[in-house]
Length: 467
Figure 1 (cartoon, helix red, strand yellow):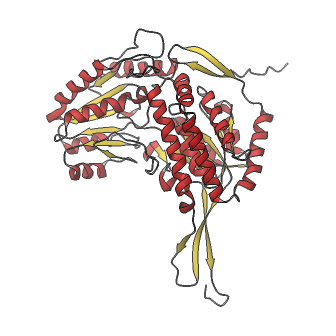
Figure 2: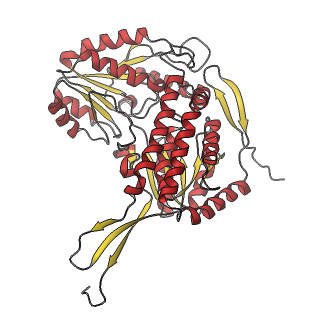
């Protein structure tokens, strides 16, 4: 008799105490097919819904998120462990992004006239169909929002495959879209394992895929999308350079570096992972960082006074510890931290690694936790060279008291975003995305809404015009 492999349920496990909170059954093949069919059917009407009506529904989503902000924030903290004050900020950011596309989407999607010597011509931006959105757990609402807001405004429909450790966040977002009045099938959540993704991409009814996650997974998804001639956008993380020049305000730079790296317990694609400091201020900077690390309050993420939350899971903290241990084996030094914190939950000490050599694992890879990789360099050019010595290229920061100098350095860093005297941030109107192995495509800003539309040329001439 043929045996059928049992599929594990999708679970909420609180990383603060590692307790199981809730489980969800994985959807059957029949349920998945029904949801794809519903999304495809909904698209046939949604694409013709006036943009003003789409905008009003986005406004409603933003309003509901603000009304439910406490519930949503508590849920994000429960499922993936972030500080509740960070969760509240995430919810407000999401509401602002929905408002942004509701306010500006119709203008972004307006016909674009083109100059031509004969007759007239314009681009018409038209939706392409059902999109598959595959998102990670570290910002469980924001990751959904930055793909859903522009693409639903554009007239596409969406299926979400969220990370398996945040199922309640995934479900409540579908509930919010329903409460806001979105037509049935326009936005749906899928409780499925990652093993189902290739078959979804292969389905003719799904027209494109947007993914945020790891480089290996992104490579696999891009290959599948390419095989079936479907567009994809990828955001695959980064190992962002945080460059401190010798004329920087060291106190402000150190404060920004610590806050940026401890944000979300270090589980942020654009947090300052490689801290590159000119030799003249390196010792002072390092001492200030160590002092600030020592003052961090580790504890319950629901406590407003807590500074450092647990990582998202047992596996997450174990993986980061292994990366630190491997770095030490390959010659790096731990200046402070480097271990789990002796308490229940997925907690890790704030850690500083130095003496990381080219060719070692830590020199190239992303460490997704509260770990600084600290480098001192002789001069500005050495800082630029080191900043570019990675396969990643997502965000980055340059600190200097001379903005003109900082901008010139920023121009030479091979990355998708550079912030001057600030950690890489997020705003609805600013594009988010990278280059090199950090992926391609842009989210947020006007750029996002054009990722999954057909920019159709319409040319108008008189019958007797020359071709």
